[in-house]
Length: 267
Image (cartoon, rainbow, N blue to C red; front, side, top):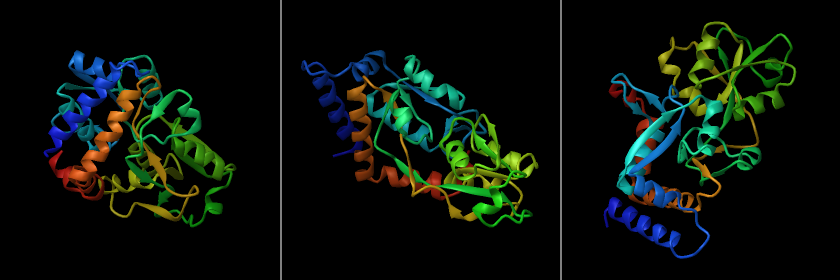
């Protein structure tokens, strides 16, 4: 059975459930009736989500949501927000789905419902190659300024593991911290290792390096999110990822956007 047929059958099943008298909210049926899936993203954060040289939204998460919209038989509408505007956009009803490199946390889950993780990353410390920092202790000093993304998990981790350092928060995507580092505005940065590694080729060769020791207790999940009441949409997104993992579409997305660099030439 083809991928689109499988997802269409799943969509019909979940819509039927929403009319069955069970306590499902109508977010999924509303999207289908409206003919439009509205997705909140933070552009400027390749390879997750960004605007390419042709002025089009693209990236790993954009392609996933294009697949969702196609399977629903609706149009995709991408809505750009700063990081601190993503959750409010979802809660206000401006967006149906929040698609960002966001880590589920207990605090965030008080406001929104996260889907099953679609990928795992690990926080890291990175610095310029001309800096002598080698260990966590080298960076955890009062004369060291560490760049983070405002409101991110990386900011919380930096404040936990580097309490003596000066934390400088930036609004925007992970590229901004690397830019600030290369420009000399900060001495080091904290972000997901994948977010750092995928942008290094855009900067002078060997200008930035990751410290060997990763932060946290293990890899952190990244997940999409919906409003609490959107139970059927939450179920459908989880089913969508199960389906594309089985079909191989998920692996193709990750290989192209996360593990390769051809997208930099194409976009």
